[in-house]
Image (tube, rainbow, N blue to C red):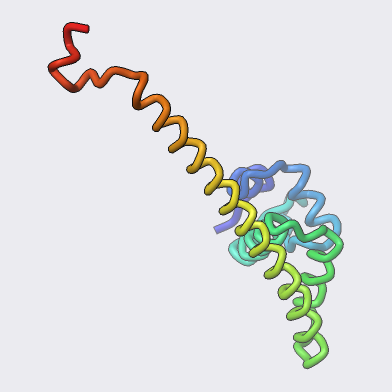
Length: 134
């Protein structure tokens, strides 16, 4: 299965400009059709999933590019160690974001319960027949 730039951008909830930029800087592989239009396949989709994940973790584009450049090289101890270090840094950043999101959700849960308790004494219970005439 192949995708046009527009279809590919829609698949990944991004812009066509972003997809073109990624291909222009050599971050995202693509092929060309007979009209020289970019087309993308499942290999490109796998790369895009990786780019999206690393970007969502807060990885700078230069680091994403460095990581994907390393992935194109022949595997060696040095190469694998360099990739490992990049991913290890993002591991820490991703888990920090998770902890921050959890703290935010816990605060919202606390405030929601707080207001529910306040409102419980102020809003009549319309499911209780004793309150229907009020």
